[in-house]
Image 1 (tube, protein in one colour):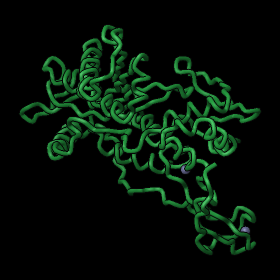
Image 2 (image 1 turned 180 degrees about the horizontal axis):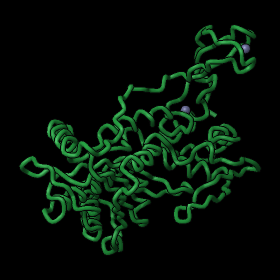
Image 3 (image 1 turned 135 degrees about the horizontal axis):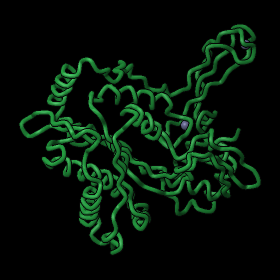
Image 4 (image 1 turned 90 degrees about the vertical axis):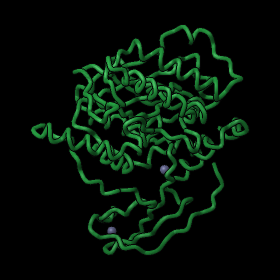
Length: 368
Ligand SMILES: [Zn+2]
Ligand SMILES: [Zn+2]
């Protein structure tokens, strides 16, 4: 089956020739890294089978954030660590979407505006939750930036995972009402207001279309009925991943790419065919600029609240001792090794074990 890297290897050079002049450095780097991932270009290690004597090359991975082949283990490690942080309370899943009219602006100022979008979402939630009508305390917000739709369209939005409760001014835990965090209708204009204020002070010269000031911005807020862990798993898939996985690529032929995607509403699988050029363009628009974080923590999760949070966790756990706690597996700090590890068995003879022979230096290969 073809992979994203194959598309770049076959068609990247032509794409660079046509658009290289105007491409962002992060996009050019992603193109190069994905082509080189797990190839001789990055070097690696040479093993030999102790049975049939055949040689096995295990090449380094590129570790680029946009690489669909790297980061599988990072996702696991991330999930293990996040599960440990979960409080034994109901959680809410809140999604904030940027209006379509502002997508071009966002695209032009990604480094400044992605953090602002995340901050506006978190601040709006914290502001409304602090109201004694709702939670009456400081909530914690785990925010994750997504930029893609299932067909790789540019669609920036923020997913937030929020515990149903917060810390009151006198240090007590205040649970949210059952199945209810904050009113979405009130949340939307607060989010819009904070976002536009932050944009205006960061980029005083940009013009904001009047229409977006009048319209309600799309905000979704639901209790996590299947548990916070499910939402975490869903989010974890995105944290270390780029817009499309290799498994979704069906064919690359005649200058066209066919891939499958799941319809967001019907959940039915469909296929889509794009020209290679359009596919590469759509893919690269989700490569984040260097230094932009996909995940941020706000409010109760701030490092300054660490001790208080520990106390809350203990008191909630003793109060609720009968309830099953979220699985708190011990993180083994697993981080993918830079080189892919050698398979345990020889893939040629299926009998021998592999012995390390020597390091293979990286080849200075020019970009595609
Ligand atoms: Zn062998
Ligand atoms: Zn890679």
